[in-house]
Length: 126
Image: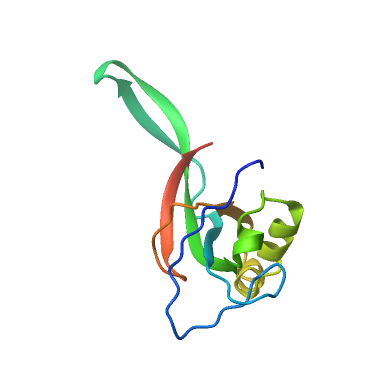
């Protein structure tokens, strides 16, 4: 939680965004976050170390992630992450809608370059 939010100034000149934390304008820091859920039950995946030896098994589970953007002003975006930021993510309208549809996990990825509403999948060990 000691990470700092990296500023990405990708604002179109005509758009006037409001900060998701303090309500100040202009909000120029783009903070991507994903709301997800388990897409499949845990399943066995077999693998070999370096392609030799006996097959080993591990359980993996597929997750579906829907990406959203939270816009912050430079002052709020430069502060360390806090509970207030997580509250803003949880109260985001898209998060509320997805939770109503059964999504129950949230994660941040500052390096995500996609658009809002994009759906990605990940396979994670159980």
